[in-house]
Length: 245
Image (cartoon, rainbow, N blue to C red):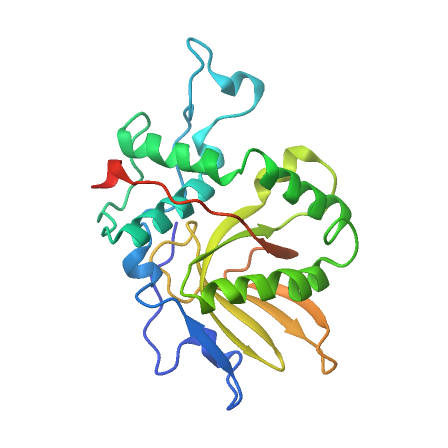
């Protein structure tokens, strides 16, 4: 069950975690998950995402909507926000086979970037950072500057969250995709504000990189409690959201 949004505080919780007079902050103007994110959770009933004629791809262990469509939901949110289209008020996901469900599935496929995203997830899960090394260090030194540039330019940043370690490709679906729309940075760490399709209408979801006094990353965490080993900036190409007009 998705928890209710938290009570409003004088200073948002994501800011309390990093508040200092020297803090650097930025937000993509006009975006909040509670107003610009889809209001339903990434919880679809079992059913095929696509059909290959009479063949149901679930017989080989792929293509079940209940496994999640986080990438498709994030791409849809960015499409709608970029086009200036309000998200629908629906609190339940669109039914399997409807135009909006099919639109999310198409954007899910696009979010995989011709399977380059699953490969990136696997290399970072199996090998550590960028083809080896410390995931937290690779996240802070390589990915964070790229994400910051996107947000500073007023663009929503699509992120891949690494949640599992190991070479088992069947655990790739344990990883996740979200949108970063703001950040707060100081000498103690970096906090990213997230739209997470698993937590709809929540404006307090964050991902954190903790730093030691020498500015070395010492760990990552997500405010909702899921494991977080690292993250990376994912590519995005807009698409006309016809099904949502």
